[in-house]
Image 1 (cartoon, rainbow, N blue to C red):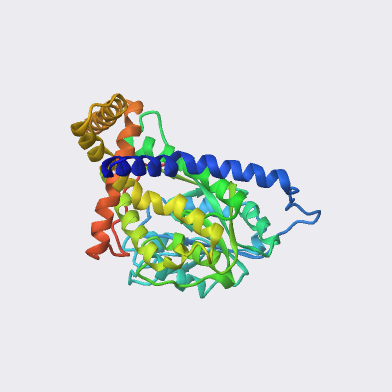
Image 2: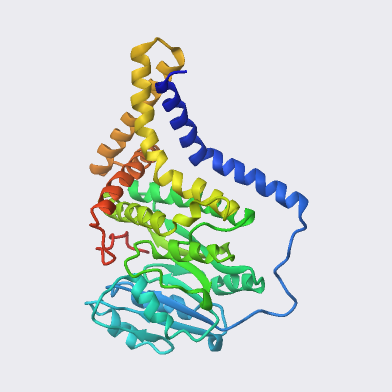
Length: 395
């Protein structure tokens, strides 16, 4: 087998493993684990209602902040045990004023905007409970989310709990909405398997919780602070549980242009996170955690986007060297896939909605964003005070 074929098959296997095989393998391992281990029940005869602090980060959310506060105040949890903190640092609109008028909510505000990690760290100085839940201001939480999350803390090994992120898409949703919605459905499945096997590898900032004593300011220049914070907790010997019955509802990006800003920022943050969490590549020190981290995250951030390019080029060069039915058919398949993605891009820009074409377009777009994110990372152009992506209005 020559070098071109080695590159072709390595790229193909890596891509298939990352997007399909990993989910199959973890599902199988979870089934084996459950077959040989008795199911543990977290429920107890007496209610578990410890004091909890809910920290909501908000920046220029005047159009939505009132709804977020009302949603928060309606959470099904004893009011005496739920401390609600809204931090609005840097907001230049009416967000702080609106929060200030609401009883039962603690407002933290300063004019300087230093990023979300800095805001979280400042808010933690005012937290008085043993458990804290973080949530974004542009999301709505289900009423039972606090109860569903804190029940996991009966287990002393649990350092944090990741809630589910649900993307609302409408019948006339654009490519950004359809693609992001499908992505998070699959991502939620993988998180469920990761948690059942060992631990979630990275929580989403829309809704996640930790033990207060485990909070660590890993650097105010962090781009994906929730991801790094949760994995640093895992590196200290704790696990992050996934709780799908605690969820945050969020609308999709308003357009692919807005989704592009979000994806490139996250991609830049991913490379930053790899540097900060470099010890997680030591599979001898963190056997299972490293396996999950590399398989679920690193391959998607590195080898898969590069593999798509190598797969196409090596496939074409192989056909120049020899006639092969398989390589010929696969090359046609690749060309058609990119062509369908191109059509999806054209239709999305013209606001023509054919959802079947949005998936290949979003997949290509998602992987292309990794390259842009990498260049932004090495040029140090991504800051923690980015312009947030506009999202669809929530009904």
